[in-house]
Amino acid sequence: MFEYREKIGQINDRLNVIIAREMEIANRAKAIADEIKDCNDDKVIAERKSETEKLTAERASLEEEKGRLEAQKDELIKKNDEELAKNVRAGKPFMEGEKIMTIAEKREAFFKALREKTLTFEARGILSSDTPFVTGADGVTGIKDVAPSLVDFVEIAEKPGQASEKATYDKDSGAEFAAHAPGTTIAASDPELGIVELPVYEMAVLTEVDNSALENPNVDIEDFVHRKLIQAWRRKLSALIANGDTTKFYGISNAVDSKSNSMVESVTLTAIDEDALTALIMGATGSADEIPGDSILVLTKAQLKEFGKVRGSDKKKVYTFQRNPQNANTGIISDGGMSARYILCSSLPANTMLFGKGLGYRLNLYSDLKVDYSSDVDFKNNMTAFRGVARVGGNVIEYKSWAKVTVTPGK
Image 1 (cartoon, rainbow, N blue to C red):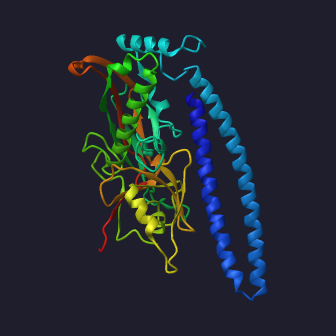
Image 2 (image 1 turned 90 degrees about the vertical axis):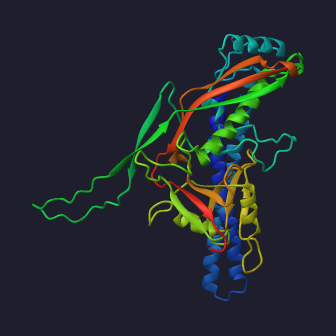
Image 3 (image 1 turned 45 degrees about the horizontal axis):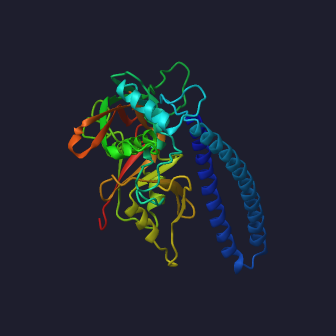
């Protein structure tokens, strides 16, 4: 099942790129139309019309590619659903060959696995960018941080059984080739290397279920518990990746190397205004003459609303948003020229955003998510408790690939 989700996630990533480019084309086409509306220079008009024709052809090509990708995605979703119908879920002990199990049979297998302590959810498969967990408790799918998506856009590495990891990073010293006279000593240009640590961090979650639900033969309790535990786990992982936990877990905000040197840039914005996105893309990370690719802006819903309020000198909105139809927590933000993916994360402190390269951060999975249960925890209230435990670690592994952005109005 998860191989389909991975492919669907890759298609979604490409669709987001296409959508962002289409927005750029639409904005440029509008700018051209405004430019030549009152223009009397035949040469300029001809050049702009030629550019418009090229933009139109590019957009048609993108639409054709988008159609092919949507068709492939629909087919993958269909195959994924067929797998679900057979209850073939990675890491779960609920299959008997290719037999489709009834709810009653699944319940029996579920509790048997719990009793025998063999119930394990495959960690890597859970962390798929095509997560279905974006619907709120009220049943409404919208911009709400029910299942944060930050965890879906970082590097994930499986390190089962390891106690920790030390990774080498290159602190770019800006060394360059230079002229060399024969017979003279070549100036040293060795890379400046450092070490980052990804210590083990054990995390656990406890969720209680009324026994009346467990005893209902029509309730797919395995699916219910699976969803509850994974929602809680993903939420906590995204919060850890964003903020860390003192020195126990290195998130983006508190990432340091083995010598306590910060691994992230520190950037200050005086306001979320018409220049904010350009300032982040052009200067928050990367070298003086390079713009990093695959930029991600992590922010809260309130901060996203502030971007939406920004108006230009013509009183029109500066920023446009293209929400991801597969995951309402993500999308593309554009100011007409620059664009970046945005991800909502409610756990960020007030006046703090993160900006950088998703794969510049690594999340290590030192174990799968293991589940136990007990009816003794809340016996008097007729509840059964399910406990999930996993071991993870994380840190920024590419020097200054992320920036911690502080918004300080008025300074």
